[in-house]
Length: 255
Image (tube, rainbow, N blue to C red; front, side, top):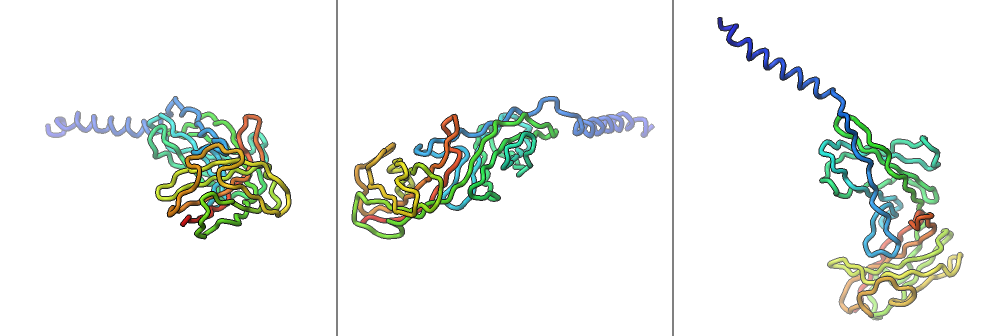
């Protein structure tokens, strides 16, 4: 009698466990949507987005949006340096643990200066389905320029002249970025064409040349600043920078 009373409950538990186990192996018929890279900013935009060099080291940074699916698992990053169809290698599999629309960032540290790298993404859901391939993007690092002055000094000139040298890169244009510290904010952005291809000193005076962004006519006394030079080497047909570098930051203070 007791066994007969418990049998229906036992059967129900078995059925539930069976379907749960099977459900984990059932293929989800809907793969994730095609991943989207963040658009590449122009060299003289105040906010930098998309594939780029970074000032801290010789790495390439990649940025893309998190999809809207609630069952996203990972993103697979594929890379080649040859741009041969279907000859890409899996570079990294990145967990997808951000909210929909959030920006994912990945630093590719295994790159060499002077080599073009091509990337595409595929999203993977919890059932193992692969999304269609994203667009292919590319970037090549060139040698950083050497900042000369002002670097790690206190100066008195509120319209300083910034100087740097460039040894052997293919850069055709330079973009200077000056930022105020504490809090960090862009003060000045300007671009100038390269004037020579030897190790001669390049220079630009604050507030001159082809200025794209300027918040104050002269810098302020008692304030800490930093500056860098972005070397721009190549643009693609769409007008995106695909080869360049960002120098290390140079810090100075005006007394």
